[in-house]
Image: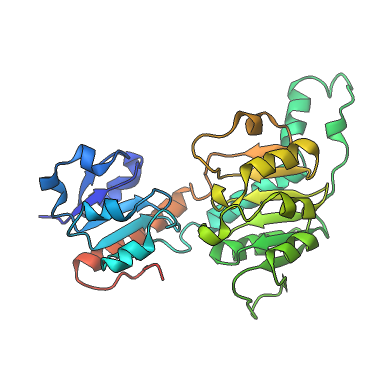
Length: 316
């Protein structure tokens, strides 16, 4: 009989088909597992599959006494209490770099759409204002990208791919990360504040965690200047959403491009009503190629665990 895996988060059925061909999946469909399955069903579970942002805390782990592996579908694992997992001897795996190219593409799309005001331009055409030669203050020439200073916060796999794409647009690239990389040709700034002072476009590609919660706040946004723009493809918790709303509303910065939000899938009405922000529904890694790569990592992690081997894509 195939080994059993608890599906802890809500996933489209199509994404589970490949994994379900190798393991028996107990799918909770995003509901609390203990409300869907009996204690008898959950007691022998040794591995679970989750989305990295789904909260998975001590009490949740304690309901699964045989749990030995938590495998995240995707690169993120911010919802998992890593200390609690380590204390219980539970290995945690993810899919590092599997969706990096796709996320970097969306980051560039959001940056171009926000800085060149494509939402505003689209409405200008559709509304008939262009044909009527109706003046619009929102259609004034924006700052272009060539030779513009673009700062990248976080220089992991995604950050590196964003940097390469930005450089191809003839912009200056700088970055701040916990590690300074000697192999990169981009300018390193010693702090996030210094990066924000240096650049006018801030691309957020950092992992979520306690140290990054609301680190992009009102003071930091002000450093970007009135032509500034912020793009977030990491986690919504990195930006103080209330501060961002105020900055977009009063002209502290010019615009934003957001693929992630503080409380997904709910987005503040005020944010959706602003013309200077471009919004997408957390689709950064949602390409066919990314899902194939992420599924391969999931299968490798689960197969190794049930074979008694270390996870090849363990969170470290």
